[in-house]
View 1 (tube, helix red, strand yellow):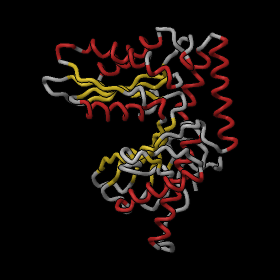
View 2 (cartoon, rainbow, N blue to C red):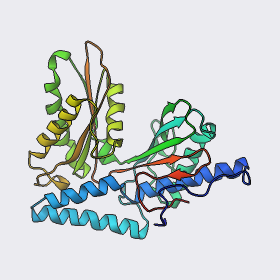
View 3 (cartoon, rainbow, N blue to C red):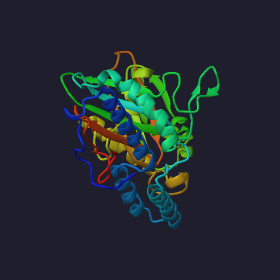
Length: 317
């Protein structure tokens, strides 16, 4: 993977290159290379946040752990290899323009790109069909790769956010539906029990995604999308933003740092996504990411040129 500057536009599909098969092949290759970028390096906002946290720790042990983290990340880029042995299962979150000219082939393109990336990156084969109990060997299978679609009316672009979530990040995930009478006060102990229980095994510091809504599936999806938000952003509602800060401060005050050992910063942040709830329910779901938060975004134009807002100074094609 080259480090040439290309966070903006690149070679385009032109009238001299209209062949549908060549267009499809370029689209597949673009997504394959994007998967590789996300597996190898952390996005700019995550790297910046980890650097801040390293400076904020006084403990020699914590300094040493962060030193190991950054050495690992540096070697991954230098050797063009995934920065974690558990490359997870690729999860794609699409903001798909209804007028994007290659919308019909997008699912097929992503599936083929995952198969190729399994060999070229390489990705550890992690997909096991649920009832067959057999690893497919290429990270595809029953409803995998998982693709979440959001249609943007009239847009001619496709924005794809990829999240590589390993087992350590997935195992702590929990959801619960509270009675309205339990109040917002029920959320903090629920989140704390997850972070300081199974979350310790997810290689802290963590990014904690909280979904608040009306039922388990609604809250669970929101909690995962909360992790996709750029670090440093806030919930749009003042009370939601205040709650994010209060939970962050509470989690960081309990004495856990990197790798779950004593420190002062357990989390990179807390992100909340919310929806309206039923009058008789108050649902909460929690997902966490490890320090190696491997998620990135690529914006694809109608001519298959692209932008990489997550990474400065790298080129996919």
